Length: 69
Figure 1 (cartoon, helix red, strand yellow):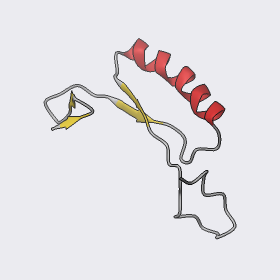
Figure 2: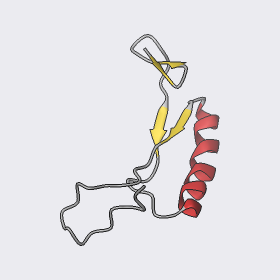
Figure 3: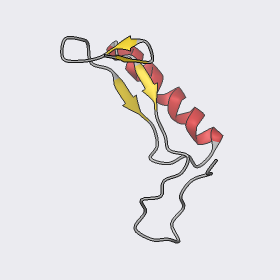
């Protein structure tokens, strides 16, 4: 199986998918990428950033859901 043209599965190396649960700002996303990418590189792990733009599964309807579309 491929993810973004990168082979994944039991016979392929480990990779990292990481990011905030929900996007709060562009700056937050860039800061996280700038912090995580060098660590992933040092460990030899391909890094894929992932964050939600609309997080509807909150415990309160008043909770922040993200910037939306």
